[in-house]
Amino acid sequence: MEFVVKYAKPSGEVLESVQIGQTEDEVRHHLQEQGMLPISVRTRGIAIFRRKEREKSIKPDDFI
Image (tube, rainbow, N blue to C red; front, side):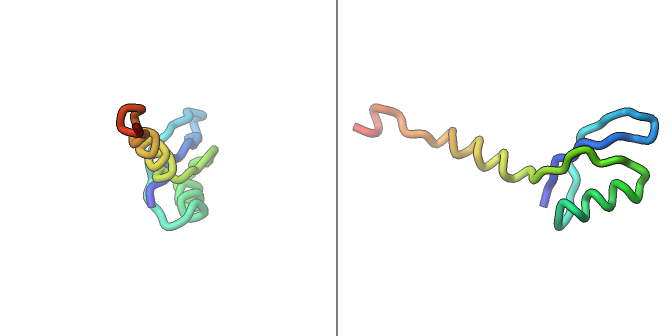
């Protein structure tokens, strides 16, 4: 699974990236092992699904 992750480096710099893992906990743990501080971890696939769902809306002419 892909996760959008926002995390802080030891220097205080805040970054956002896409990480791959089985669970949110696994991704958080991996970041912590590297000395990073996870701020947020969310599934990437959900946002993509919602965006595609909106793109498939029916036009009024098609409905009639």
